[in-house]
Length: 167
Image (cartoon, rainbow, N blue to C red):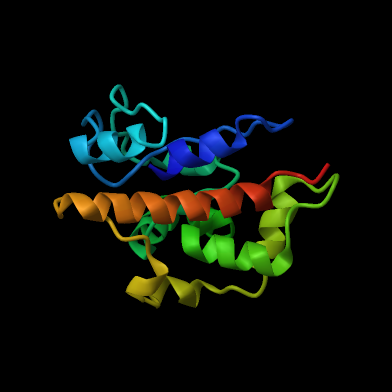
């Protein structure tokens, strides 16, 4: 959901970044029907999407890795330790990004990510607070999918505003 929402928000950008989705589960699984429904209500068709397992080459190649939970960040950093400084939880990245402000004209993504990284240390990998994660609605009631989709819609909109270079 997050990748589709973010890609949609950034589709009209001058520099269109590649947005991809990968997770910790097995590859090739279809999107749950609940996700298809909440995303269709937002004009996004995910019926053809299949899951992809996160791999080291994906993490190595990414300019920015965004996870929904601490576990996602931990797993990405375990796959590629050098990715630590460009790997964040979505809520954390939005919060840090709003503190440093949106990308400036001429500022590359790497420079903005370094600014967002700030004084953050690896100790953050041991800090667990459910409030810092986006709740995974999988296996829960249908209304949980809508709650998560609405939260992701807000967070990805805010992130897109921060990532797109000012004109």
